[in-house]
Length: 115
Length: 114
Image 1 (cartoon, one colour):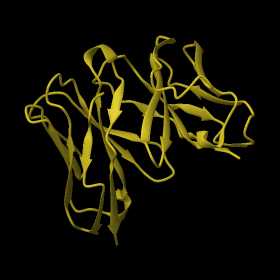
Image 2 (cartoon, chains in turn purple, blue):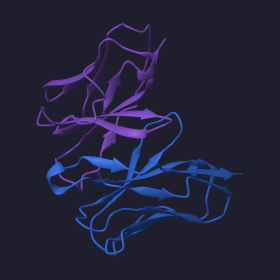
Image 3 (cartoon, each protein chain N blue to C red):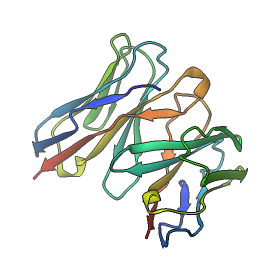
């Protein structure tokens, strides 16, 4: 049974470039989450979708960040233009239903380095 | 914003020792408490989701208890093994209208020496 699939696993790019991170949630899961992990702030929720609709994007750091979920099996997180301070590990997670007693299933993450 | 705190931040134990650590959260408007295990260079993996006061859950040598009235949960590891070395995260939903939006604690990093 495939878990949450993220791509790419690693991305190194120069500042100013556009970066697109991709996520395929577990089939049948209707909630999807994007997180960012940094040494300073730990694991931060960026945005949360339910049934493909963005519910809360209050964690998105600034307008350079955007996320979409065009269908139930695909989501993207885009940074444009990228800056060195965006360097972090970005995780996508999904859960079966939008209720608080459902565990979240995490992908392997994308390690992003902006030079 | 919900305040979820974990202690200690890090813990070193010898193989075979039993250990425990704490997650504290606001006791008002409680919905659920999640525990995750996060090995270095991997992704967080769900251990337990607990919802009822007095809940106790067990998976192998790892168990957890929940006290919603006083706002804490303990995670216990019996007879620690080197493969238990990981960061253990707890998390709680922000509010009932937030569905499964979680606020994570800072984690307890456990290192088990052989």
